[in-house]
Length: 253
Image (cartoon, rainbow, N blue to C red; front, side, top):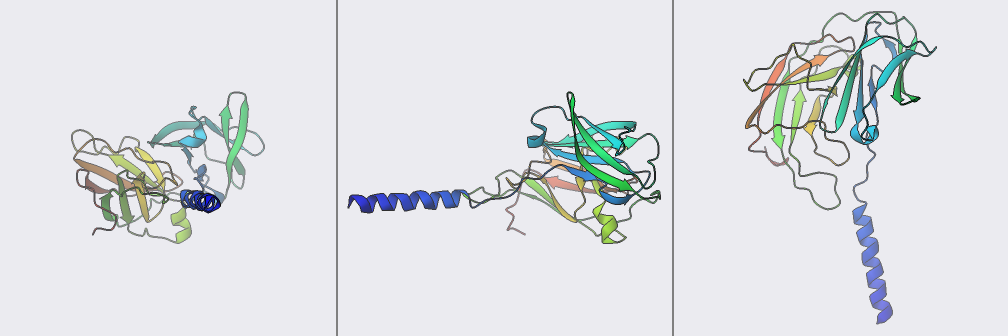
């Protein structure tokens, strides 16, 4: 009898351990735009740094040629909640057909966090799109062993932008928020940028990713979105209003 009870207890512990690890996912890493090759020589550089990677310290970045020459940039820090977003705008055009590195500086120590290679062309035409297709304000119930949270979040679907899929992958979504007067001032920097995806979330729907947007305590939240290419050319704006007092379950229509 004693051995039977011990066996039952061991099985229960193993079962709990299996359930506890049912939600397994890799956390996002630093993301860089542009990336790869053939970046325009008038590129701006945007870097997304999750809070767990910044380790509570101020994130300080620079851009240099692989040869070692650092370039001069205008440095802008935006982002919301647990995501720091840094935009670096070179004060002169980048050299054609050259590899560049983005470097993180921590005291006397530096490390390369990403790289890209320029082509020979500039990008001058702004993205063209048909705006926001749908938006919902949602709130799930966190339960054991799955990755969802009970934090409210917005799910937004965009119309497909004009152009090919390769160009779309290099786009950024600029997100502006209305002021106390209910109006959006697009002359100001966006609250944050998101890497382009036709369907994306704002907030913290999953424990697998950091919160990327902090919702203010307001009943009706007006947001404005623009598609921004790697050279900083912005599309026309498309706006939405969320009723943050009545979040729906993800299964509701």
